[in-house]
Length: 589
Image (tube, rainbow, N blue to C red; front, side, top):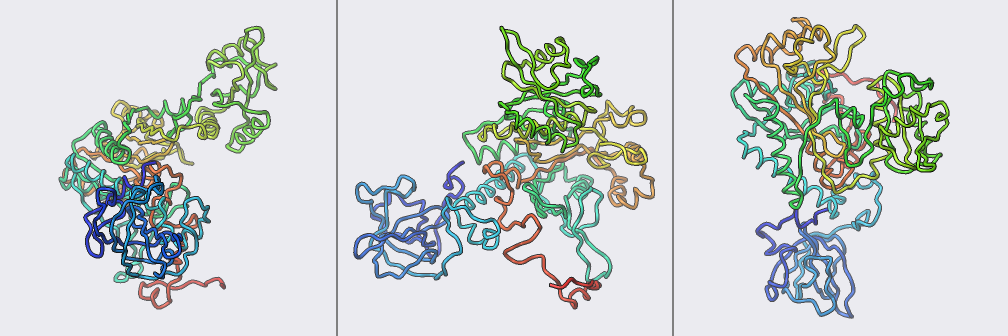
């Protein structure tokens, strides 16, 4: 991880200070400076002096202070002193200021502080509830300072990249109308129009399409979005994304715009790192990794071995699809039993395992089912997977999507601990299905949203084989995380009407749900497409964090609570009445 100094460059000092801690070094010996910050640590130094480490957001500087000064950890101070070289043998190589100290100081206490509820030492394990209850103290820790300042660097790099590419930054409303994008929305009651509600936007999707109709050509926004969904490591109620839309473009143009921004971010955060952003299709991703957001930092690709077992005597392998992989690490019998249970928990009928053995230079398979496999089946399986002695082969047999998905989950669980944490593997996934399946009435279900443009080569199959139709949509993936998604939009009424017909949406329903967008399209909509990626997720991965809460200043817990402020809270009855709302019966406290 980059040091904090990389993300906390000291600005020109002003106000109560003439220098920041990190700016002090041997070149400034003899200068009289004023520093401001928090007392980080106090150590005795002889009978009359103490060492006081003063911390600001750029670093720490050691000050030699008379013992008569009454100071305590986390007090806020201003210290005026002379920059001097530390005595020989007392340097601290862990600090950028480790060869100097401030002497002959005058100390001014700006604010006293009570003892803080936990240590800021990074080596101390902290309970997350305590950290979030006192988040303003938790944020003083070096790790959190680094994370949030890294995020600031990410935002700045995004803005520079988008401006270089001719995008205009435009804000869209936070009080919006309900949109049919799938996620549950937060409702905001209107005081002036009782019984009516705004919603908080889950994305600026329709607003940015209207900006294309308005002729802005290239729009972007670092947008705040809100979704009332269950929280997890990579999801909060509130999240931030780079949102962009452009007119008169193709899919490859959008991929280029976003790739330019991603390279700018990586260059700003990890200047020594060069990245390549390649492209794979959704079908390839599923076939090779069993996931549409695969982690490719380790091997163990899936192989379709259905043909090998077309005439097998093993009942467990008589399925439309048989998928196999070589486990990325050795597996004990106990671990194999755990994997079988895991596969069943994911919905598989079972998980077959076969250990590769070598006898007199010849490879064979050993497992509870190997005696039911013919020698031809065994040798073809070994050859298809390029398996070696002591390898373990894992297989799932089911319909194609279920088989690859389940084995893909097994692959991820085994391989992720082996992944190189320094690798940044960005890639695009394209050619997603336009429809993700059929509803209970046999009607196709949109995989993205109903304004996604189908692949032009697949138009003819909309009536005859809709589930085979590909969309002009695309995801950006990093190390097994989906950073974001986008699509080329439908902009002509003839194609839009056809998609509504396939989805079973009649004209009245379409007008009710999407009327203001469809009305706008009547007045000349350019071909356009867009994308959005999560800045929280990208920043977390660049910081080496597994949870986006570590890159958010004031996050919610997994239950949606703000432990610092106590939100959500009950609202007084008279306040509800002003909004035209009636309180319901409340459970006893």
